[in-house]
Amino acid sequence: MSALAKASGALKSVDYEVFGRVQGVCFRMYTEEEARKLGVVGWVKNTSQGTVTGQVQGPEDKVNAMKSWLSKVGSPSSRIDRTNFSNEKEISKLDFSGFSTRY
Image (cartoon, rainbow, N blue to C red; front, side, top):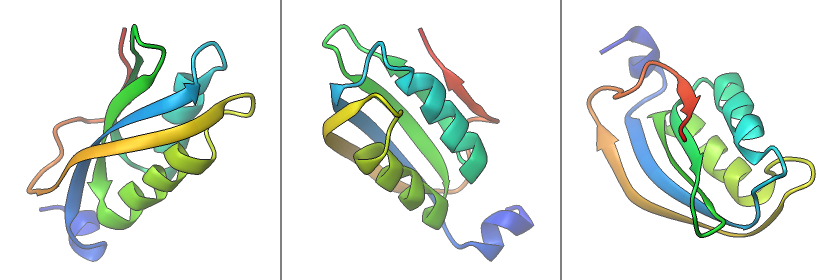
């Protein structure tokens, strides 16, 4: 385990889906930017149902900060109605080396 992971406690992984006006408002780009700022890894993508879905992994406190951002902030012109989080679990290592947008 890296020193970073030891210092900030357990590594967490969580799946998310954001509902509201989250497509066509640069939501994925801002999500990627926020994830890099916080230092979490994972991915984001639009769904055919008009939502945005993805996964976030990293130290628990940073994953929680990202969850808060996905629930309350989003991109400047988005409107978040609700965010569902699922499969939240502790992991021994990160599955991703960075944060990316999937298509």
